[in-house]
Length: 330
Image 1 (tube, helix red, strand yellow):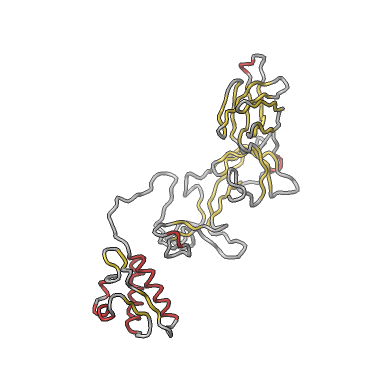
Image 2: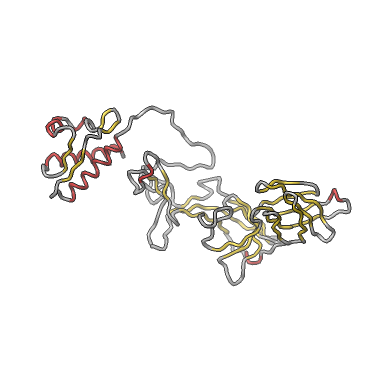
């Protein structure tokens, strides 16, 4: 890509030399510039990896649009050439669960081009994506995860995640860095059921449990009249015996007792509350769900499964921030 860019720039310079009313470079005298061979480019404008700030790129008053574009090309290439190349050991990413391609700067990482990643990547190409079965309502379902690039947004055109630099993007703050630019809908993650599943039959006592984007979700409700939202346990699941403690969000959560009626007594940094079976309560800023209890006459043998987190249970609808993300700026 660099070679093509330099060749393009040299062609522009040849045009500049032929058009005396076009773009001229000041700083080195015009006579000196004409005496140099183009094989010496970017000298004398860039020497030792440093741009000579006494140079100026000027467009004539009656310059054609092509001359202005030529000046922009020259300016961008001089910026690129203002560097010193050094040897480095380099880094290569290898291992299982990885797919890779050499993507030119300014290109999408995945599109219809044979030199980029595939637009659809599933478990057969990326073994870290799940491909297996889950059980719901005593029935096994085949499921898989998939990444899809460039789906058509509302504008009606495909958009892709792009490898961007300050030379290929309108963003000036990139400087010498390389970044991935992603707009809405340019990359989507799917959790796919191969067969029809009635997720609206999920309940708190019989939830649909899936691992979505690496996080375990227990879907407890999907309204029959609104398939665009669902309620799920999203906090961490903890099996605790009476006397056990865990740290959540920097606070100590303890199971103090389990009652014969399946209620539990918990404390969060010394603040104590009782939570009835299947209920949710916020204690000292921590939300706790009394999911399941195991009562024994001997207190030391009593235990419970709790869902604990800043948000232990929440309702999500299309377009909401994902679990754990900032709701105002996901």
